[in-house]
Image (cartoon, rainbow over all chains, first blue to last red; front, side):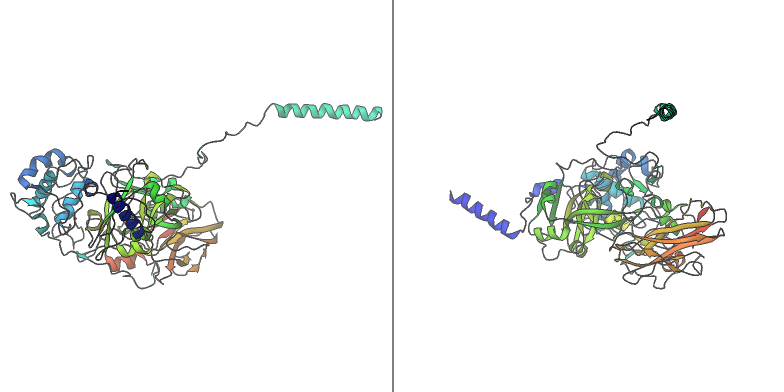
Length: 179
Length: 395
Protein backbone atom coordinates (compact mmCIF):
# COMPACT_ATOMS: atom_id res chain seq x y z
CA UNK A 1 0.00 0.00 0.00
CA UNK A 2 1.39 3.40 -0.97
CA UNK A 3 1.66 6.13 1.62
CA UNK A 4 -0.91 8.20 -0.26
CA UNK A 5 -3.62 5.50 -0.28
CA UNK A 6 -2.92 4.75 3.37
CA UNK A 7 -3.49 8.40 4.24
CA UNK A 8 -6.70 8.40 2.17
CA UNK A 9 -7.95 5.30 3.97
CA UNK A 10 -7.16 6.79 7.36
CA UNK A 11 -9.01 9.98 6.41
CA UNK A 12 -12.02 7.87 5.45
CA UNK A 13 -11.91 6.07 8.76
CA UNK A 14 -11.82 9.39 10.63
CA UNK A 15 -14.77 10.71 8.61
CA UNK A 16 -16.73 7.55 9.35
CA UNK A 17 -15.89 7.82 13.03
CA UNK A 18 -17.39 11.33 13.09
CA UNK A 19 -20.74 10.16 11.75
CA UNK A 20 -22.89 7.59 13.46
CA UNK A 21 -24.44 5.99 10.40
CA UNK A 22 -21.99 6.77 7.61
CA UNK A 23 -24.69 7.11 4.95
CA UNK A 24 -24.53 9.49 1.99
CA UNK A 25 -21.52 11.32 0.63
CA UNK A 26 -20.32 14.91 0.74
CA UNK A 27 -21.57 17.01 -2.18
CA UNK A 28 -19.01 18.96 -4.20
CA UNK A 29 -19.18 22.76 -4.31
CA UNK A 30 -20.27 22.46 -7.92
CA UNK A 31 -23.15 20.17 -6.95
CA UNK A 32 -24.37 22.65 -4.33
CA UNK A 33 -24.12 25.51 -6.85
CA UNK A 34 -26.07 23.43 -9.37
CA UNK A 35 -29.03 23.32 -6.96
CA UNK A 36 -29.53 26.97 -7.83
CA UNK A 37 -29.29 30.33 -6.11
CA UNK A 38 -30.94 30.80 -2.73
CA UNK A 39 -30.92 34.29 -1.32
CA UNK A 40 -30.83 35.68 2.23
CA UNK A 41 -32.13 39.15 3.17
CA UNK A 42 -28.48 40.12 3.66
CA UNK A 43 -27.96 39.43 -0.03
CA UNK A 44 -25.90 36.32 0.65
CA UNK A 45 -26.40 33.93 -2.24
CA UNK A 46 -27.15 36.58 -4.88
CA UNK A 47 -25.27 35.70 -8.06
CA UNK A 48 -23.38 37.90 -10.48
CA UNK A 49 -25.28 39.87 -13.06
CA UNK A 50 -27.25 43.11 -13.02
CA UNK A 51 -30.28 44.80 -14.49
CA UNK A 52 -32.25 48.04 -14.65
CA UNK A 53 -35.94 48.87 -14.97
CA UNK A 54 -35.24 50.21 -18.43
CA UNK A 55 -33.77 46.87 -19.44
CA UNK A 56 -36.73 45.05 -17.90
CA UNK A 57 -39.50 46.66 -19.96
CA UNK A 58 -39.16 44.51 -23.06
CA UNK A 59 -38.71 41.37 -20.93
CA UNK A 60 -41.81 42.15 -18.87
CA UNK A 61 -43.95 42.71 -21.95
CA UNK A 62 -42.76 39.43 -23.43
CA UNK A 63 -42.78 37.12 -20.38
CA UNK A 64 -44.74 38.65 -17.51
CA UNK A 65 -47.54 40.88 -18.80
CA UNK A 66 -49.69 37.99 -20.02
CA UNK A 67 -50.51 37.06 -16.41
CA UNK A 68 -49.69 40.19 -14.40
CA UNK A 69 -51.06 42.80 -16.83
CA UNK A 70 -49.27 45.29 -19.02
CA UNK A 71 -48.32 47.52 -16.08
CA UNK A 72 -48.29 44.73 -13.46
CA UNK A 73 -51.69 45.75 -12.17
CA UNK A 74 -52.81 42.11 -12.04
CA UNK A 75 -54.81 39.73 -14.24
CA UNK A 76 -54.58 35.93 -13.94
CA UNK A 77 -51.58 36.59 -11.74
CA UNK A 78 -51.59 38.98 -8.79
CA UNK A 79 -51.01 42.72 -8.97
CA UNK A 80 -47.35 43.55 -8.35
CA UNK A 81 -47.78 47.30 -7.94
CA UNK A 82 -49.87 49.65 -5.84
CA UNK A 83 -51.52 49.26 -2.48
CA UNK A 84 -49.15 51.44 -0.47
CA UNK A 85 -51.09 52.97 2.40
CA UNK A 86 -53.87 50.37 2.29
CA UNK A 87 -52.62 47.80 4.81
CA UNK A 88 -54.47 49.30 7.76
CA UNK A 89 -57.72 49.80 5.84
CA UNK A 90 -60.75 47.56 5.37
CA UNK A 91 -59.48 46.58 1.91
CA UNK A 92 -55.74 46.01 2.13
CA UNK A 93 -53.92 45.46 -1.15
CA UNK A 94 -50.84 43.32 -0.64
CA UNK A 95 -48.28 43.77 -3.44
CA UNK A 96 -44.51 43.76 -3.78
CA UNK A 97 -44.63 47.53 -3.29
CA UNK A 98 -47.03 47.68 -0.36
CA UNK A 99 -46.25 44.49 1.53
CA UNK A 100 -43.04 42.61 0.72
CA UNK A 101 -40.39 43.49 3.34
CA UNK A 102 -37.24 42.58 1.37
CA UNK A 103 -36.23 43.15 -2.26
CA UNK A 104 -34.03 40.04 -1.98
CA UNK A 105 -37.17 37.92 -1.49
CA UNK A 106 -38.58 39.24 -4.75
CA UNK A 107 -35.40 38.29 -6.60
CA UNK A 108 -35.33 34.85 -4.94
CA UNK A 109 -38.97 34.16 -5.83
CA UNK A 110 -38.85 35.41 -9.42
CA UNK A 111 -35.65 33.46 -10.01
CA UNK A 112 -37.09 30.17 -8.78
CA UNK A 113 -40.79 30.40 -9.63
CA UNK A 114 -41.34 32.74 -12.58
CA UNK A 115 -42.62 32.81 -15.26
CA UNK A 116 -45.38 30.56 -13.87
CA UNK A 117 -45.39 28.19 -16.86
CA UNK A 118 -41.60 28.23 -17.41
CA UNK A 119 -39.97 28.61 -14.01
CA UNK A 120 -36.20 28.62 -13.99
CA UNK A 121 -35.94 29.89 -17.56
CA UNK A 122 -34.81 33.45 -16.82
CA UNK A 123 -31.13 34.40 -16.78
CA UNK A 124 -29.83 36.06 -13.63
CA UNK A 125 -29.56 39.36 -15.52
CA UNK A 126 -33.20 39.04 -16.59
CA UNK A 127 -34.26 38.44 -12.99
CA UNK A 128 -32.38 41.58 -11.86
CA UNK A 129 -34.07 43.54 -14.66
CA UNK A 130 -37.58 42.23 -13.92
CA UNK A 131 -37.19 42.99 -10.21
CA UNK A 132 -35.83 46.45 -11.03
CA UNK A 133 -38.88 47.20 -13.18
CA UNK A 134 -41.37 46.01 -10.55
CA UNK A 135 -39.60 48.09 -7.90
CA UNK A 136 -39.50 51.09 -10.26
CA UNK A 137 -43.23 50.88 -10.98
CA UNK A 138 -43.74 50.91 -7.22
CA UNK A 139 -41.68 54.10 -6.90
CA UNK A 140 -38.91 52.34 -4.98
CA UNK A 141 -35.97 52.62 -7.43
CA UNK A 142 -35.30 54.91 -10.37
CA UNK A 143 -35.56 53.91 -14.01
CA UNK A 144 -31.81 53.55 -14.41
CA UNK A 145 -30.80 52.29 -10.96
CA UNK A 146 -28.56 49.27 -11.51
CA UNK A 147 -29.54 46.35 -9.31
CA UNK A 148 -26.94 43.69 -8.58
CA UNK A 149 -25.71 41.55 -5.70
CA UNK A 150 -24.49 44.67 -3.90
CA UNK A 151 -27.25 47.20 -4.53
CA UNK A 152 -30.33 44.95 -4.30
CA UNK A 153 -30.00 44.13 -0.56
CA UNK A 154 -29.57 47.84 0.13
CA UNK A 155 -32.98 48.67 -1.35
CA UNK A 156 -35.28 49.83 1.44
CA UNK A 157 -38.78 48.39 0.94
CA UNK A 158 -41.72 50.56 2.13
CA UNK A 159 -43.05 47.80 4.43
CA UNK A 160 -39.62 46.78 5.76
CA UNK A 161 -40.75 47.19 9.39
CA UNK A 162 -44.28 45.89 8.83
CA UNK A 163 -43.82 42.44 10.34
CA UNK A 164 -44.13 41.44 13.98
CA UNK A 165 -43.52 38.18 15.87
CA UNK A 166 -46.27 35.69 16.74
CA UNK A 167 -47.96 36.76 20.00
CA UNK A 168 -50.44 33.87 20.19
CA UNK A 169 -52.33 32.67 22.11
CA UNK A 170 -54.08 35.99 21.66
CA UNK A 171 -57.64 34.89 22.50
CA UNK A 172 -57.56 34.01 26.13
CA UNK A 173 -61.19 33.79 27.15
CA UNK A 174 -63.01 30.46 26.70
CA UNK A 175 -65.34 30.79 23.76
CA UNK A 176 -69.01 30.17 23.26
CA UNK A 177 -71.04 31.08 20.19
CA UNK A 178 -74.19 33.15 20.39
CA UNK A 179 -73.27 35.23 23.42
CA UNK B 1 -90.68 -48.61 1.33
CA UNK B 2 -94.31 -49.60 0.62
CA UNK B 3 -96.28 -48.61 -2.44
CA UNK B 4 -97.96 -45.61 -0.83
CA UNK B 5 -94.67 -44.23 0.40
CA UNK B 6 -93.08 -44.67 -3.02
CA UNK B 7 -95.95 -42.83 -4.67
CA UNK B 8 -95.64 -39.98 -2.17
CA UNK B 9 -91.89 -39.82 -2.68
CA UNK B 10 -92.30 -39.64 -6.46
CA UNK B 11 -94.85 -36.84 -6.08
CA UNK B 12 -92.52 -34.94 -3.74
CA UNK B 13 -89.63 -35.45 -6.16
CA UNK B 14 -91.65 -34.02 -9.03
CA UNK B 15 -92.55 -30.98 -6.94
CA UNK B 16 -88.93 -30.41 -5.85
CA UNK B 17 -87.67 -30.98 -9.35
CA UNK B 18 -89.97 -28.23 -10.58
CA UNK B 19 -88.64 -25.66 -8.07
CA UNK B 20 -84.98 -26.64 -8.60
CA UNK B 21 -85.51 -26.12 -12.31
CA UNK B 22 -86.79 -22.60 -11.69
CA UNK B 23 -83.76 -21.69 -9.56
CA UNK B 24 -81.33 -22.99 -12.15
CA UNK B 25 -82.65 -20.47 -14.68
CA UNK B 26 -81.10 -17.56 -12.74
CA UNK B 27 -77.63 -18.43 -11.47
CA UNK B 28 -75.73 -15.89 -9.42
CA UNK B 29 -72.89 -14.34 -11.37
CA UNK B 30 -69.36 -14.50 -10.05
CA UNK B 31 -67.79 -11.38 -8.62
CA UNK B 32 -64.77 -9.56 -9.99
CA UNK B 33 -61.54 -11.54 -10.09
CA UNK B 34 -58.48 -10.68 -8.01
CA UNK B 35 -56.98 -7.26 -8.63
CA UNK B 36 -53.42 -5.96 -8.28
CA UNK B 37 -54.35 -2.61 -6.70
CA UNK B 38 -57.68 -2.19 -4.97
CA UNK B 39 -60.34 0.37 -5.78
CA UNK B 40 -63.27 1.49 -3.65
CA UNK B 41 -66.82 0.39 -4.49
CA UNK B 42 -68.37 2.14 -7.46
CA UNK B 43 -71.19 3.12 -5.11
CA UNK B 44 -68.83 5.21 -2.96
CA UNK B 45 -68.47 8.66 -4.49
CA UNK B 46 -66.85 11.27 -2.19
CA UNK B 47 -64.01 13.15 -3.86
CA UNK B 48 -61.76 16.10 -3.15
CA UNK B 49 -63.36 19.46 -3.93
CA UNK B 50 -61.59 21.85 -6.25
CA UNK B 51 -62.30 25.24 -7.71
CA UNK B 52 -62.01 25.86 -11.43
CA UNK B 53 -59.18 28.28 -12.20
CA UNK B 54 -57.03 29.21 -15.18
CA UNK B 55 -54.00 27.83 -13.36
CA UNK B 56 -55.04 24.43 -11.95
CA UNK B 57 -51.38 23.67 -11.15
CA UNK B 58 -51.57 26.29 -8.40
CA UNK B 59 -54.43 25.83 -6.00
CA UNK B 60 -55.99 23.54 -3.46
CA UNK B 61 -58.44 20.69 -3.14
CA UNK B 62 -60.20 19.84 0.09
CA UNK B 63 -60.94 16.60 1.93
CA UNK B 64 -64.61 15.50 2.20
CA UNK B 65 -64.37 15.42 6.01
CA UNK B 66 -68.05 14.53 6.42
CA UNK B 67 -67.49 11.33 4.44
CA UNK B 68 -64.50 9.99 6.35
CA UNK B 69 -64.56 7.73 9.41
CA UNK B 70 -62.14 7.52 12.33
CA UNK B 71 -59.03 9.70 12.31
CA UNK B 72 -57.03 8.58 9.27
CA UNK B 73 -57.75 10.28 5.95
CA UNK B 74 -57.56 7.96 2.94
CA UNK B 75 -54.43 8.99 1.00
CA UNK B 76 -56.49 9.51 -2.17
CA UNK B 77 -58.65 12.05 -0.30
CA UNK B 78 -55.85 13.93 1.50
CA UNK B 79 -56.19 17.64 0.80
CA UNK B 80 -53.85 19.17 -1.77
CA UNK B 81 -52.11 22.52 -2.03
CA UNK B 82 -49.66 22.96 -4.86
CA UNK B 83 -47.89 26.05 -6.18
CA UNK B 84 -46.54 24.74 -9.48
CA UNK B 85 -48.15 21.37 -10.07
CA UNK B 86 -47.29 17.86 -8.87
CA UNK B 87 -43.84 16.80 -10.10
CA UNK B 88 -43.35 13.29 -11.44
CA UNK B 89 -40.21 12.20 -9.60
CA UNK B 90 -38.31 8.94 -10.07
CA UNK B 91 -37.09 8.06 -6.57
CA UNK B 92 -34.00 6.43 -8.08
CA UNK B 93 -32.79 9.85 -9.24
CA UNK B 94 -34.05 11.94 -6.31
CA UNK B 95 -31.41 13.40 -3.97
CA UNK B 96 -31.59 15.30 -0.68
CA UNK B 97 -28.70 17.69 -0.10
CA UNK B 98 -28.00 19.06 3.39
CA UNK B 99 -25.49 21.91 3.45
CA UNK B 100 -24.82 25.36 4.87
CA UNK B 101 -23.79 25.73 8.52
CA UNK B 102 -22.91 22.05 8.96
CA UNK B 103 -19.64 20.23 9.61
CA UNK B 104 -20.22 17.51 7.03
CA UNK B 105 -22.53 18.40 4.13
CA UNK B 106 -24.34 15.37 2.79
CA UNK B 107 -26.12 14.27 -0.34
CA UNK B 108 -28.39 11.29 0.18
CA UNK B 109 -30.25 8.94 -2.11
CA UNK B 110 -33.70 7.64 -1.19
CA UNK B 111 -32.21 4.18 -0.66
CA UNK B 112 -29.76 5.65 1.84
CA UNK B 113 -32.50 7.56 3.65
CA UNK B 114 -34.54 4.37 3.93
CA UNK B 115 -31.60 2.57 5.55
CA UNK B 116 -31.67 4.98 8.51
CA UNK B 117 -33.61 4.28 11.73
CA UNK B 118 -37.23 5.21 11.07
CA UNK B 119 -40.47 5.84 12.91
CA UNK B 120 -44.19 5.93 12.11
CA UNK B 121 -46.45 8.54 13.67
CA UNK B 122 -50.02 9.69 13.10
CA UNK B 123 -50.22 13.46 12.57
CA UNK B 124 -52.73 15.87 11.13
CA UNK B 125 -51.73 18.26 8.38
CA UNK B 126 -53.65 21.49 7.93
CA UNK B 127 -53.17 24.33 5.47
CA UNK B 128 -52.55 27.68 7.16
CA UNK B 129 -55.34 28.99 4.93
CA UNK B 130 -57.89 26.36 5.99
CA UNK B 131 -61.23 27.95 6.91
CA UNK B 132 -59.92 31.27 5.58
CA UNK B 133 -63.35 31.95 4.10
CA UNK B 134 -64.72 32.05 7.65
CA UNK B 135 -63.07 35.44 8.23
CA UNK B 136 -65.34 36.92 5.55
CA UNK B 137 -69.07 37.47 5.72
CA UNK B 138 -69.68 34.72 3.19
CA UNK B 139 -68.26 31.29 3.81
CA UNK B 140 -68.31 27.77 2.44
CA UNK B 141 -71.63 25.89 2.56
CA UNK B 142 -70.13 22.53 3.60
CA UNK B 143 -67.55 21.27 6.07
CA UNK B 144 -65.49 20.19 3.08
CA UNK B 145 -65.41 23.72 1.64
CA UNK B 146 -64.95 25.43 5.00
CA UNK B 147 -62.67 23.08 6.95
CA UNK B 148 -61.43 20.51 4.41
CA UNK B 149 -57.84 21.72 3.99
CA UNK B 150 -57.02 19.39 6.87
CA UNK B 151 -56.26 15.68 6.81
CA UNK B 152 -54.55 13.11 9.01
CA UNK B 153 -52.18 10.29 8.05
CA UNK B 154 -49.87 7.66 9.46
CA UNK B 155 -46.48 9.00 8.33
CA UNK B 156 -43.26 6.99 8.18
CA UNK B 157 -39.81 8.47 7.91
CA UNK B 158 -36.55 9.47 9.54
CA UNK B 159 -36.44 11.83 12.52
CA UNK B 160 -34.78 14.99 11.16
CA UNK B 161 -32.72 15.32 14.34
CA UNK B 162 -30.92 12.12 13.44
CA UNK B 163 -29.71 13.57 10.14
CA UNK B 164 -28.80 16.92 11.71
CA UNK B 165 -26.65 15.03 14.24
CA UNK B 166 -25.13 13.18 11.31
CA UNK B 167 -24.12 16.38 9.46
CA UNK B 168 -23.16 18.20 12.68
CA UNK B 169 -24.57 21.72 13.18
CA UNK B 170 -22.04 24.54 13.28
CA UNK B 171 -22.28 27.32 15.87
CA UNK B 172 -24.87 29.86 14.77
CA UNK B 173 -27.09 27.32 13.02
CA UNK B 174 -30.60 28.61 13.77
CA UNK B 175 -32.77 28.00 10.71
CA UNK B 176 -33.22 25.47 7.94
CA UNK B 177 -34.19 26.64 4.48
CA UNK B 178 -36.24 23.75 3.07
CA UNK B 179 -36.66 23.54 -0.68
CA UNK B 180 -38.92 21.37 -2.82
CA UNK B 181 -38.25 19.83 -6.23
CA UNK B 182 -41.49 21.16 -7.68
CA UNK B 183 -41.20 23.50 -10.67
CA UNK B 184 -41.25 26.64 -8.48
CA UNK B 185 -38.65 25.23 -6.05
CA UNK B 186 -40.97 26.10 -3.17
CA UNK B 187 -38.99 27.31 -0.17
CA UNK B 188 -39.69 27.90 3.52
CA UNK B 189 -37.57 28.75 6.56
CA UNK B 190 -37.87 26.39 9.53
CA UNK B 191 -36.58 27.21 13.03
CA UNK B 192 -33.88 24.71 14.01
CA UNK B 193 -35.57 24.06 17.37
CA UNK B 194 -38.48 22.38 15.57
CA UNK B 195 -36.07 20.45 13.36
CA UNK B 196 -34.33 19.13 16.49
CA UNK B 197 -37.61 18.40 18.25
CA UNK B 198 -40.18 16.29 16.37
CA UNK B 199 -39.65 17.11 12.69
CA UNK B 200 -39.41 14.18 10.34
CA UNK B 201 -38.41 13.41 6.77
CA UNK B 202 -41.35 11.31 5.63
CA UNK B 203 -41.42 8.82 2.79
CA UNK B 204 -44.41 6.73 3.90
CA UNK B 205 -48.10 7.57 4.18
CA UNK B 206 -50.77 5.19 5.43
CA UNK B 207 -48.71 2.09 4.79
CA UNK B 208 -47.40 2.90 1.32
CA UNK B 209 -45.03 5.44 -0.20
CA UNK B 210 -46.19 9.08 -0.09
CA UNK B 211 -48.69 9.99 -2.76
CA UNK B 212 -47.19 12.33 -5.40
CA UNK B 213 -49.65 15.00 -4.23
CA UNK B 214 -48.17 14.67 -0.73
CA UNK B 215 -44.55 14.98 -1.76
CA UNK B 216 -43.35 11.65 -3.19
CA UNK B 217 -40.69 10.54 -2.64
CA UNK B 218 -39.79 12.70 0.40
CA UNK B 219 -41.36 15.52 2.37
CA UNK B 220 -40.65 17.52 5.47
CA UNK B 221 -43.06 17.07 8.36
CA UNK B 222 -43.21 19.63 11.17
CA UNK B 223 -46.09 18.15 13.19
CA UNK B 224 -48.75 20.58 14.34
CA UNK B 225 -47.52 23.43 12.14
CA UNK B 226 -49.17 24.99 9.11
CA UNK B 227 -48.98 22.77 6.04
CA UNK B 228 -47.05 25.19 3.83
CA UNK B 229 -43.87 24.90 5.91
CA UNK B 230 -43.87 21.09 5.53
CA UNK B 231 -42.14 21.24 2.18
CA UNK B 232 -43.00 18.47 -0.28
CA UNK B 233 -40.68 16.81 -2.80
CA UNK B 234 -37.84 17.83 -0.46
CA UNK B 235 -34.52 18.25 -2.27
CA UNK B 236 -32.50 20.60 -0.11
CA UNK B 237 -31.99 21.68 3.48
CA UNK B 238 -29.72 24.73 3.75
CA UNK B 239 -28.73 25.38 7.37
CA UNK B 240 -28.47 29.12 8.05
CA UNK B 241 -28.27 31.67 10.84
CA UNK B 242 -31.43 33.53 9.73
CA UNK B 243 -34.76 32.99 7.99
CA UNK B 244 -34.68 33.85 4.28
CA UNK B 245 -38.03 35.70 4.38
CA UNK B 246 -39.30 33.77 1.38
CA UNK B 247 -42.43 34.73 -0.53
CA UNK B 248 -44.56 32.15 1.27
CA UNK B 249 -43.56 33.29 4.76
CA UNK B 250 -43.84 37.04 4.15
CA UNK B 251 -46.35 37.95 1.46
CA UNK B 252 -48.34 34.75 2.13
CA UNK B 253 -49.23 32.91 5.36
CA UNK B 254 -48.60 36.05 7.43
CA UNK B 255 -51.51 37.49 9.40
CA UNK B 256 -52.37 41.13 8.67
CA UNK B 257 -53.68 42.95 11.75
CA UNK B 258 -56.03 45.95 11.79
CA UNK B 259 -53.08 48.32 12.43
CA UNK B 260 -51.42 47.23 9.17
CA UNK B 261 -48.71 45.14 10.84
CA UNK B 262 -48.47 41.49 9.84
CA UNK B 263 -47.65 38.65 12.19
CA UNK B 264 -44.97 36.45 10.73
CA UNK B 265 -44.02 32.81 11.43
CA UNK B 266 -47.36 32.00 13.09
CA UNK B 267 -46.45 28.35 12.68
CA UNK B 268 -48.22 26.16 15.29
CA UNK B 269 -51.90 25.71 14.50
CA UNK B 270 -54.22 26.42 17.40
CA UNK B 271 -56.85 24.01 18.73
CA UNK B 272 -59.76 23.53 16.37
CA UNK B 273 -62.75 21.25 15.98
CA UNK B 274 -65.74 20.94 13.73
CA UNK B 275 -68.91 18.85 13.65
CA UNK B 276 -68.79 16.76 10.46
CA UNK B 277 -72.23 15.21 10.94
CA UNK B 278 -74.70 16.76 10.75
CA UNK B 279 -73.06 19.52 8.73
CA UNK B 280 -73.80 21.86 5.84
CA UNK B 281 -75.48 20.12 2.91
CA UNK B 282 -76.84 17.19 4.95
CA UNK B 283 -80.57 16.60 5.28
CA UNK B 284 -81.89 14.76 8.32
CA UNK B 285 -84.57 12.23 7.36
CA UNK B 286 -86.81 13.16 10.30
CA UNK B 287 -86.94 13.21 14.08
CA UNK B 288 -85.18 10.36 15.84
CA UNK B 289 -81.76 9.03 16.69
CA UNK B 290 -78.56 10.33 15.06
CA UNK B 291 -74.90 10.29 16.01
CA UNK B 292 -73.30 13.71 16.11
CA UNK B 293 -69.63 13.28 15.22
CA UNK B 294 -66.67 15.38 14.24
CA UNK B 295 -62.93 15.96 14.40
CA UNK B 296 -60.72 17.94 16.76
CA UNK B 297 -57.01 18.70 16.65
CA UNK B 298 -54.37 21.03 18.04
CA UNK B 299 -50.87 22.07 17.07
CA UNK B 300 -50.05 22.36 20.76
CA UNK B 301 -50.48 18.72 21.66
CA UNK B 302 -53.32 16.42 22.60
CA UNK B 303 -57.02 17.16 22.51
CA UNK B 304 -58.29 16.87 26.09
CA UNK B 305 -61.93 17.74 25.71
CA UNK B 306 -64.60 18.38 23.10
CA UNK B 307 -67.95 19.87 24.05
CA UNK B 308 -71.02 19.98 21.86
CA UNK B 309 -73.86 22.50 21.94
CA UNK B 310 -77.32 21.91 20.49
CA UNK B 311 -78.67 25.36 21.32
CA UNK B 312 -76.22 27.71 19.68
CA UNK B 313 -73.81 27.82 22.60
CA UNK B 314 -76.06 28.41 25.61
CA UNK B 315 -75.33 24.96 27.03
CA UNK B 316 -72.51 22.52 26.34
CA UNK B 317 -72.22 18.77 26.86
CA UNK B 318 -69.03 16.71 26.80
CA UNK B 319 -68.70 14.49 23.75
CA UNK B 320 -67.08 11.07 23.93
CA UNK B 321 -63.53 11.03 22.54
CA UNK B 322 -62.21 8.03 20.64
CA UNK B 323 -58.98 6.46 21.84
CA UNK B 324 -56.14 6.63 21.22
CA UNK B 325 -55.95 10.39 21.60
CA UNK B 326 -52.62 11.19 19.98
CA UNK B 327 -50.56 14.37 20.13
CA UNK B 328 -50.85 16.51 16.99
CA UNK B 329 -53.35 14.12 15.40
CA UNK B 330 -57.05 14.18 14.64
CA UNK B 331 -59.25 13.12 17.55
CA UNK B 332 -62.70 11.77 16.68
CA UNK B 333 -65.59 12.80 18.93
CA UNK B 334 -69.09 11.35 19.06
CA UNK B 335 -72.39 12.01 20.79
CA UNK B 336 -75.70 10.20 20.35
CA UNK B 337 -78.57 12.63 19.76
CA UNK B 338 -82.31 12.20 19.58
CA UNK B 339 -83.56 15.01 17.34
CA UNK B 340 -86.99 16.28 18.30
CA UNK B 341 -87.57 17.72 14.84
CA UNK B 342 -87.26 21.34 15.96
CA UNK B 343 -84.71 23.95 14.87
CA UNK B 344 -81.29 23.43 16.42
CA UNK B 345 -77.86 25.07 16.24
CA UNK B 346 -75.01 22.60 16.63
CA UNK B 347 -71.33 23.29 17.22
CA UNK B 348 -68.28 21.81 18.90
CA UNK B 349 -65.46 23.43 20.83
CA UNK B 350 -62.28 21.73 21.95
CA UNK B 351 -59.71 22.21 24.66
CA UNK B 352 -56.12 21.04 24.20
CA UNK B 353 -53.54 19.88 26.70
CA UNK B 354 -52.19 23.42 27.07
CA UNK B 355 -55.61 24.45 28.41
CA UNK B 356 -56.36 26.57 25.32
CA UNK B 357 -60.06 26.63 24.45
CA UNK B 358 -61.21 26.99 20.85
CA UNK B 359 -62.56 30.54 20.50
CA UNK B 360 -65.63 31.87 18.73
CA UNK B 361 -65.34 33.65 15.40
CA UNK B 362 -66.32 36.88 17.14
CA UNK B 363 -63.48 36.51 19.64
CA UNK B 364 -60.97 35.84 16.87
CA UNK B 365 -62.14 38.92 14.99
CA UNK B 366 -61.93 40.99 18.17
CA UNK B 367 -58.30 39.94 18.55
CA UNK B 368 -57.22 40.05 14.90
CA UNK B 369 -59.75 41.91 12.74
CA UNK B 370 -60.87 40.36 9.46
CA UNK B 371 -57.86 40.98 7.20
CA UNK B 372 -55.55 38.24 8.41
CA UNK B 373 -56.93 35.62 6.03
CA UNK B 374 -55.05 32.71 7.58
CA UNK B 375 -55.06 30.59 10.73
CA UNK B 376 -58.80 30.66 11.45
CA UNK B 377 -59.71 28.17 14.20
CA UNK B 378 -63.09 29.48 15.36
CA UNK B 379 -66.14 27.52 16.49
CA UNK B 380 -68.30 26.45 13.57
CA UNK B 381 -72.07 26.56 13.99
CA UNK B 382 -74.46 24.46 11.86
CA UNK B 383 -78.12 25.41 11.75
CA UNK B 384 -80.66 22.59 11.54
CA UNK B 385 -84.10 23.57 10.25
CA UNK B 386 -87.34 21.72 11.06
CA UNK B 387 -87.32 20.34 7.50
CA UNK B 388 -84.03 18.59 8.35
CA UNK B 389 -81.79 20.74 6.16
CA UNK B 390 -78.42 21.72 7.59
CA UNK B 391 -76.84 25.03 6.63
CA UNK B 392 -73.74 27.07 7.32
CA UNK B 393 -74.09 30.12 9.55
CA UNK B 394 -71.71 32.28 11.51
CA UNK B 395 -71.47 31.91 15.26
